[in-house]
Length: 153
Image: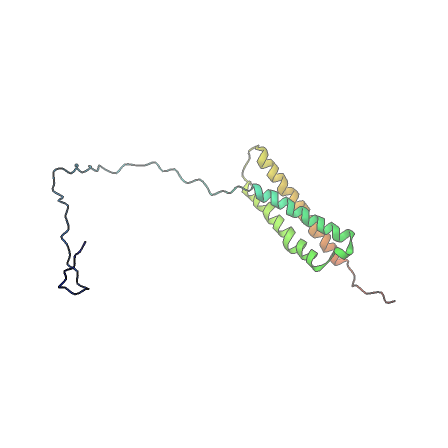
């Protein structure tokens, strides 16, 4: 560490000598010889995949929820509100169809007989059927609905 003498101003520091390393010392280990470059076999990276288990599970349950809301609107007309229409047509059905499409697309070239993959494909197909049915029910209800006219007493 640098020392400061009493006669020098506070900001002036006298450097202390630093010990240097003698690179020509015989006690150092010999350098490693580097030969010609070697050929390294590099295998290509595996394709990026994701595990779509939860997509299939979520897709079929979202489709089922949309289908239940659509059936509730069909059976109980006061349930046909702006929010329920929005939930089926703008959130539930498109989201479940997107999840089902991702599942079917992820396994489009897979020909294995793995029961997990078969179950996910089945869940995706059921999700598509439920969400299309739910959207069709709501569209039919909207097309054939009449303007609400209150009954005057």
